[in-house]
Image (cartoon, rainbow, N blue to C red; front, top):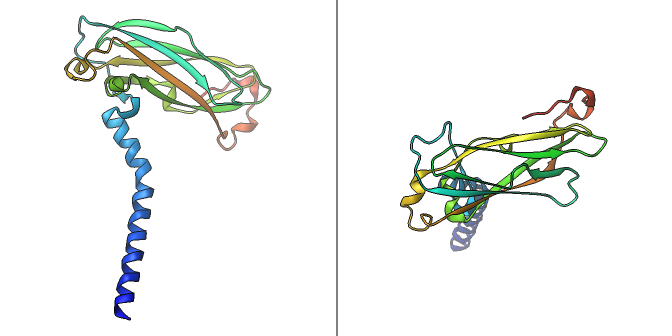
Length: 189
């Protein structure tokens, strides 16, 4: 009987450990991607780079939206050239053609994946939810640079073109915001 109790306790322990690991895997993976740039996840910084190199990199901007998401969403400029370490400023445009306020959140990634850890955002509309009133059009900025350390990475040093992609998804309006007066033109940027 005692052997059966030990086995049952061990099985419960295994189930608890596996459940805890499954629960912790999502935030851990998110942290891992942000720190390492794995999966094309860009880093963030408070300010631009202190070093600017003579090497040029082309940045391409891409926009998409979740199926059935009613906004129109596109980059204002499709491509720009920057020196590595130079701070860039790009804009994306969103338009709500509906007759109701809609909240959205943008997910993002960088391609090629090797460049993800070196593509650094200083400020971005994607850091916050966006609320567009009926008929509202906004231009949303993203400020960024490519970290000069990219030239020391054996896998990323030959990257000459980087694509920054955003996908907008509809989210629930914050409590109380669904009754906002569309004439107020409130936009959380």
